[in-house]
Image 1 (cartoon, rainbow, N blue to C red):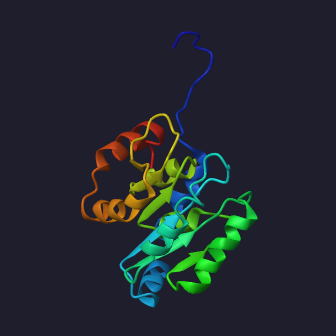
Image 2 (image 1 turned 90 degrees about the vertical axis):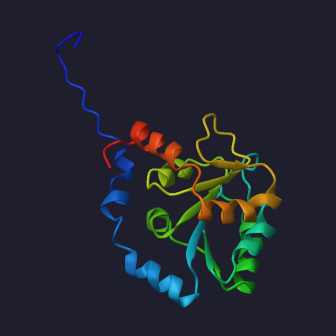
Length: 184
């Protein structure tokens, strides 16, 4: 408006185009996973790799606890995650049938399949929130947290149960969607 010699077009976050274009592509696969495990919900755990920010070591035992008969936990590690941590989770995967480590490099499908995300200070939180689904972070260092952030790992199970019963952050997500990516 000031210079009159160019136009600005708000497009949103192009990286997310594939998420919105694929949003209904995995309905049958999701139902198959739920049926296979006699489960009601799919939880995605996607921690950051940064040693100072990751929750992977801190909540490993809690991840094992939440992978119950009615929940499947998919785990998507960043490519740079500490390999010894990944090996510890592979042991969990071998011993608990409702835990699956995702080997796919692309997280998009798993964002769509999942009903809830557990993370920490990872940018994947914002991608997931834009799908209008709840997030629980553990010790997030993000500046403007508009989702449930817990600081005590022992509260993870209760946080998940509470979130599935009552989604207290739905209005906060609406604000994020309208301000970060309004053209969904």
